[in-house]
Structure formats: structure tokens, C-alpha cells
Image: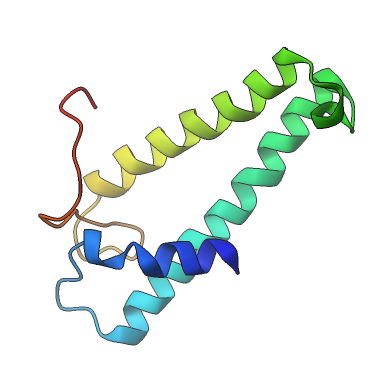
Length: 104
């Protein structure tokens, strides 16, 4: 639910186009499910190296795996979603309110 609330609050940063409110909600739900799948995948990859309680041990490599995987997936999802046709259910476009970093 936290991911869903996060996605809803981000809506002003995206162009909704001709989407109805329920369609916007569906897109936020899909994004939330994606977030919910990325976190356990990142945790599992880190656990392969650091064991199930890797976050308690403070070892640097599992933390790097966890955050690195999340970063790579987030970048890949952004590239793919903004490259799909705008009417695709898994695509989005940024509004003028979205802060942009010229390096990224």
C-alpha cells in the first residue's frame, strides 16, 4: 500500500493524456505491483551473498547488490516505459512539473 500511495502522489509529475481516473488508478496499481516485486527480488539477490539476515550484519556487498539491483531495474523500467507508445498500459510520459537532471 505504501508503494501505491507513493505512485498516487507522483501523478502530477506525469501526463495523464485522455485517461479516465480509474485508468490512472490502474496504472498506479501496476506500478505499485512492480515496486512490490523489485524489493523482494533485490532482497533475495543480496541474501544469496550475505545470508537471510544480511541487513543486520552491515556487510557492504549485500547492500551494494540490493541498491545496485534496484537502481538498474529502475533505470531500465524508465527507459522502456517512456519508449513504449503513449497509449500502452505500461507506458508513461513526464509532465512539465517533473524535475529533470540533465545528466540522466
